[in-house]
Amino acid sequence: MVKLYVDTDKFGSGQRSATVDAFHNAVKDIVRAKLAANGGHWDSFVFGKSFDMITADDFRSVEKMLLDAGHRFDWSAAISPRERPDVYKPAEGVGEDMATFSFEHAEAIVAAADAEGREQRGQGDNVAQYPAICTGIARYVRSPTQVLAYLTDGVPADTIAIIDDSGGTLTAPILEQFKGVICAGGSTRSHLGILTREYGVPCLMNAKISGIHQGDTVAIECTAQPKTADDYQANRDVTARVWRLKAAG
Image 1: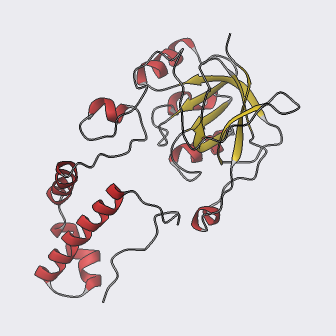
Image 2 (image 1 turned 30 degrees about the vertical axis):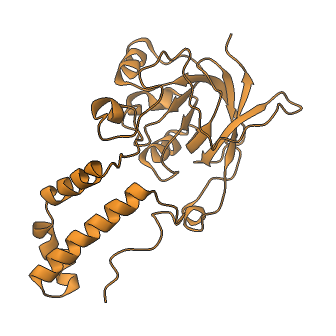
């Protein structure tokens, strides 16, 4: 018997949502049905006939089945729930005034200020290790309009961009102008993680933060050990801290 899937997700955490499990099960059902109808060897199906027999309509039918059953998808870029609100889970704060907006992740680790006045307001996966902690001004970047304004007027000095698009497409034109990046999605192997590493911009991926607003002075513990592919595979908790040094105003 051929096993059609692995028991854990891409990075081995083994904690998938009901929507992900439903999607995987639906795709496996399609593959089983197409393989049974076609016959032949598994290898010849996967590396040949499946390209013709597994169609876009099959995946559209899976999406319809999930939505009809009440499932909604998680989002990594704010543009997704704006364009297809019927498909994605609600995105609190999308379109809100950036002066008052903040990510509020339940998983964020918060702690009182230490002896240096640094108040921990979250954590994330460090992309690359640098000799000094990165300190700057928190600025949420959540729309193409903001990126266009920064392209036109320039990125304000010492900007630590807080974004939710782990693909890096949104901020790619201005990425090298950021002093640092805090991204709420992805992993150190995501496109954005790779780009920031190439540009030498300190970055935390998969960050969970709370109580950081536009204009706050923040610091990224980019001196911490980077999280590697082996760490993800072994489900090791390797994180770097995010501190708030001073609230805006």
